[in-house]
Amino acid sequence: MRSPELFYAPVLVLAISDPLATLVGMTWKLQAVFPNNKTLQGSLVFLPSAFLAVFLTLLLVRGHFFARMVLVSLIVGSISSAVELPSPFGTDNLSVPLSVFLVIAGMEKPLPLS
Image (cartoon, rainbow, N blue to C red):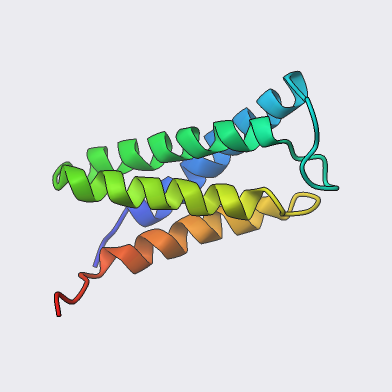
């Protein structure tokens, strides 16, 4: 089964959301949340940017089932944001794309109705 979104989405989240969160966190640093200097402001920017990156990827690759794309994008954004926040010293460069990949791959399979 060919699923290009399994490769595009993790790279886009890492390429867009992580630097954007860093930029916002460094610009408007009110208080670091974890000892690794990650901020709440950066995480609050990471979530919608990851949502948007995944949603646009699914929209351009799949282009249908709007409600499912929104649900998958929201779940991926939330989980990747939660994974990125406590990741120490650059390990988020591995943990974020891996979490995006695993969530999308896991949600790609149809859920049983009963």
